[in-house]
Image (cartoon, rainbow, N blue to C red; front, side):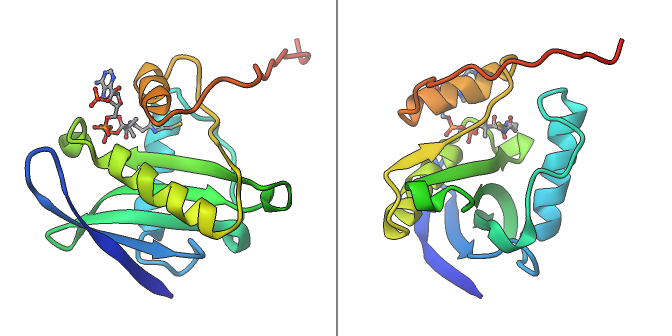
Length: 153
Ligand SMILES: CC(C)(COP(=O)(O)OP(=O)(O)OC[C@H]1O[C@@H](n2cnc3c(N)ncnc32)[C@H](O)[C@@H]1OP(=O)(O)O)[C@@H](O)C(=O)NCCC(=O)NCCS
């Protein structure tokens, strides 16, 4: 079910309508989400595997002139330990730098609180400097480093 969460203005005074669906599956934002996943993998800031589950992934998105321009996907696997995890966030290239992600993060935090969460969690590639900056602005702090080693040769 699609819920309208509110209306907001970008830094350049464009009107955004913020919408939410508890499940990404069958939501109007599903294909937008898939394209953003592909873009992130192509940019080298994401791994080529399916990291989300239709049943536990929700999505908040922003529409400008009835077109989806940004999204904030999250998943609820760790909700029992009061954490809401960000699956992927993205803003269309031509709309970046207008404060849209900051707006969506506010709605995401409201959603997390409504679900009884005490933490939000993001996973960001170390070379994704823009998202690291935006996460810092959203108040996220590095808690752990996750380390990898290839052992297949
Ligand atoms: C990361 C991303 C979502 C930010 O969206 P955005 O709407 O442009 O972000 P905002 O305009 O709300 O900016 C928030 C903060 O991010 C940082 N930021 C944004 N663009 C930046 C840039 N080009 N360079 C450095 N910092 C930047 C700033 O700290 C900014 O705060 P400020 O406006 O007070 O300076 C967007 O760049 C994007 O879609 N990137 C590609 C997808 C991606 O990497 N997603 C995250 C995967 S983990």
